[in-house]
Length: 361
Ligand code: APR
Ligand code: ZN
Ligand code: ZN
Image (cartoon, rainbow, N blue to C red):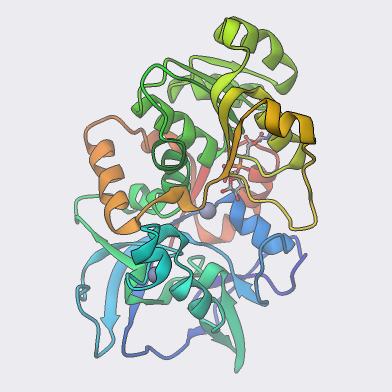
């Protein structure tokens, strides 16, 4: 079958090949024919080695498709079901899932699956990004990673739910728990940042300031609910206007993955406010905070992993919001492409030109 493969970590382009095979279907696995998959910045983080990843590997983790085969012990997923791929599904039994009630922090399945190659090429193992690898016509997934959805949801819409939308909207409504009337700023207006903006709007924020280097993105952000938009340089003036005496925002979100924008998000939060780090950074990159500000500002600096979402219920919640016209997913698709155009899509993402490119397989 066809797939896009990154040969070595650090390579800049993917090879589109047609001789990839799947590993054997285990008793608790399902085989999914991928119909659509979004190109997310985390794929690039995997290619660069910012995220731990075995190579060669098939990138892609934001996908949706149809179940074509199930293992002998699979329950709850049937052949013909339409599914969204969850790249970190909860096991439902561990300390994170049960005691801490944080199913998004469950690593039992993700770590186990990521350690096993998903594909074979010429007899050699090929890994799947984050244990998935949706830049392929078919994938083998643990049954928990296939979240069954209604058949009337278009696959391109469903694919976005698998990562960027859940990550972004979830950061606002689950991680930060933005309240009605609050003031928010979002650094980075890619697929994830635009989803954060929509999440803040759904939560009833009174002001949502979008910050991006790209002027086109600033304009687009207003379509997704931003009340103001500016470049990083222009933020001080907008912040003074929006926040007034409060001095800073109730909630500041970083959806880029750079130390300087994490620092800027921390600085943009008001005293007692919350800065949420959604962007993925390299383990070697650090952010400096001084001792005085840590205590005096009384800010909360919080990570957000997979939108602090429970994929079993939140995927459906987000689709209900989309069906109700409260979440614009069509508008997030900047380009509809084939697998052969994947390198061009990654290039456009690096240049900040697209919200999401969606590959149809
Ligand atoms: N200041 C402001 N905006 C910036 C800067 C900067 N220094 N650098 C990049 N941007 C903007 C780009 O112009 C682009 O619009 O940030 C946006 C990033 O969007 P994408 O590359 O599409 O990334 P996305 O898929 O949205 O992911 C964002 O969230 O989940 C993580 O791994 C993901 O770290 C990534 C982040
Ligand atoms: Zn668990
Ligand atoms: Zn992603």
